[in-house]
Image (tube, rainbow, N blue to C red; front, side):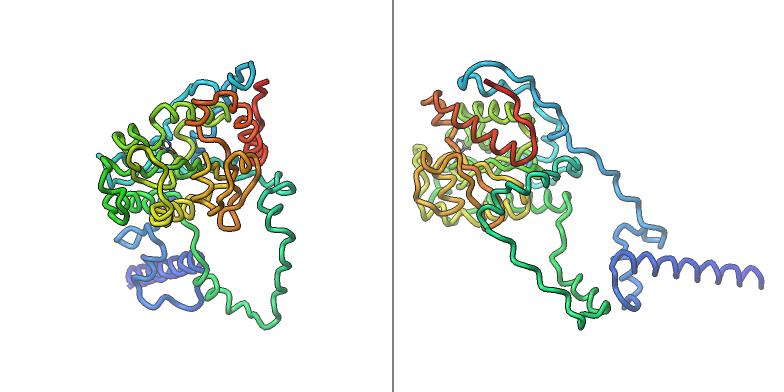
Length: 352
Ligand code: URA
């Protein structure tokens, strides 16, 4: 008798605890409609009704934790130090064409990675948006009971794991894309390389011969210079995210046609929407044109902040392939990259 009562009491306690956890997890009012709702809401609950598995401990993100590489002295030609470290952050790179579509495990970003608010006063976003519209006051009629419904309708933040998974799915979609004639001449699609958790995204024009062969952006000679630029900024090679306006190589390395860029642009838009970087560095005129639709030349655009979809600051600069032909332009590029670092609250190594 006492044993039966004790069991009943234990059951009751477990139910109350599960309800409280469900309530805390969902913010919902009332009771869950079906017992399985508790399991769903608690996500990692074990099938036997035990407590949810503890969340994986947050780790710093290796790509941005590393100290800046030592500054090499010299003029603008020496501005870009050789890439010193290849990062373990490759673990979050989208899968190589041969390994698709398994999504890699990721660590959440280091807290510092998302903290450049100190720069807000000089933010290019604010500069271009003008004064912030005043927020409507909360009406007296909005009762606390309306809150859970509002919360349910609000877009849910994408976790780092979801971001990686969705990007891998998108890369898979791109891999079979035949929406424009560029697919006819490709060996591989070229989706991205680097970390989807990066605060900074570099956007180029489109794959060249080497990229087409390897299925990765910026792995040819221009890519090697880009690696040096990234290292000079204090990032690890795979700690930043790199992609292109078009994902297939245009024949004979010609500039992509406006129609090809327009057809491919939803892929880039989805990449940027998932990554939500703090800054986009647009490499060359085609990249800026593909991002904001301007017809202005890169010499005029470079070094001046633009905005992507009204929210993400873009810093246009010269394409590394241009720097290979015109090394004296490295000085301007380094100045643009220092501006990016200033915006991100990172100190720029003194490179003369
Ligand atoms: N140039 C680009 O714009 N993108 C690449 O991926 C390689 C070279």
